[in-house]
Length: 245
Length: 292
Image 1 (cartoon, each protein chain N blue to C red):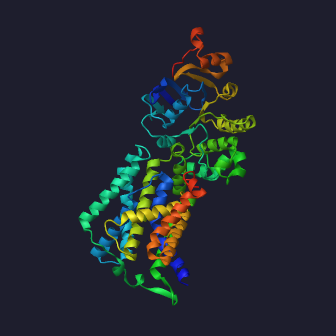
Image 2: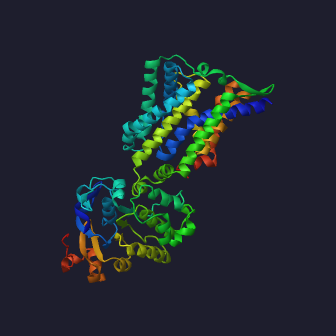
Image 3: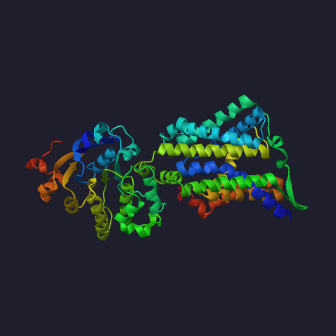
């Protein structure tokens, strides 16, 4: 079943054409790693899917419905959650308040404050701590937990491990593994290619706003992805855009 | 004893300023907007209470309660019709818009109600003149205490709303990071509209109390805006308890100034305001402009 279908999506930052005719589709339960260099358009693509950035052309369909014109807060109600780059917790609110405020307009579903804290046990002792007082890894876990409070069907995770100590990255990926085990559809933006390809079952590589490579994680070698990442793949015929199902 | 009297009268006066400052503080804290029409909106509240009291022949206290829902709706409309549009133009446009609104409101009030000075004091009955005489030189007015209690209930109640309720958490979340708020399903525009509605309603309440306590005319707004703004700055952005305290500090400063010489009353308030701005705390005001 197709959960998300992005069709010839364009998005601009002023004069910059950040996302250029991107098309791909995700089935429910897919785990997609979105890779690409800085400025390749990963964040803009995620934000356009979440409704936080306007699409200049193309469509985003979610669960069969065209959501291209819906504002971000309405898409949350349909089941799209974005964990933004830089965590973006509400700094002067406690961890518990960050969770509660996200749960207020949540879809019905399995995630409540209790089940989220069960899945992210490192947050339980930090419940009453101000979000700004958390370490980077704790903030990332709290940001994912906050997104889960909306009971999403699709979770978009931007730059999961950026700026985190290696040990904190391990803790965050443990949390992520629990999320993936529930069968939630996940799009993951990750600079660490090794980690991304271990978690994901599919890899899409963006280059200057276009999809340079799209394939199953198991069949792609690190070299193929690296070539696409740096735009070297064209000559070798490595880029093989896959038809959207 | 006269100094103690000045302090007590100052606290009661400060409660009026705090009530005026409440809505201004809320809008600064949640939306980063300084509503320059705030004082004039309060005067609209005063006229509304006056019209209701006059036409329906009810007590001004009943009239001000009847005016509250009207002011809530007016605040909602103010946001959707004016502020949301001007917010799209950047942070300075709402300042210009509300400045223009202030002029329009003042002139409209002149046109409709004439520049006559009015008061609801007489209609409110004995409560405005009754007082407890503690000693020969010290008396506490009933009505002053009523305003103090209302100010504590309104500002404290709103502070509780912000801390303890779902709506309050949404207001604070949107104030701290509107972009992240939309990503967890919060409609920032709806939240801002509610904040404006609450701010306008409390301004109307403050205006009605001013109308009972003293006099008002179409041009009363700007001076009230200055006192409200000073109370917000003295108390620090982003805290309603701070605003209550700021109002009281301003009131006490004015009363003590007047005790020295009546012409120093307003000046003493301005001096305290400027001292807070010049202090190290004043320099950090901009940094702590969101709801903690």
